[in-house]
Length: 115
Image (cartoon, rainbow, N blue to C red; front, side, top):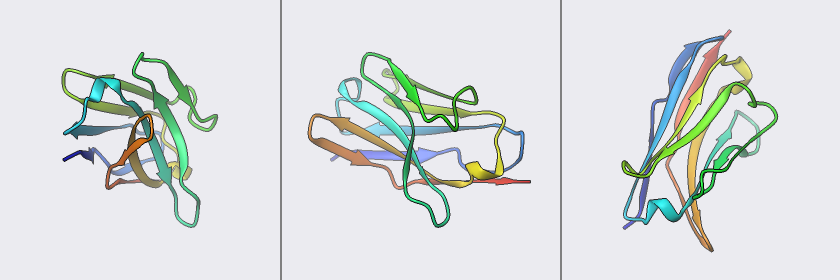
């Protein structure tokens, strides 16, 4: 059975950093495109960053230059390094794994940035 489990969220002051992790199990992780999404209070869920199985990355304009997505296929884990955090980055962060029509979501981890 497939599972994606996020960790690393928490409360941080503006300008601080956090690293989120998403550990996968039950899937051929290296074949999956992995995404980080977030959903802020009263907002729609939005794509933050993506890393393909080949290692290509894309970012939302709002996080470019501040966030970095990476993956370690040996650990079946995708990371989101978040620097220079802003209050508007406050959200529940979710990881998503996609392989063709197969999609899995994690349960989310809360990130709160205080001003």
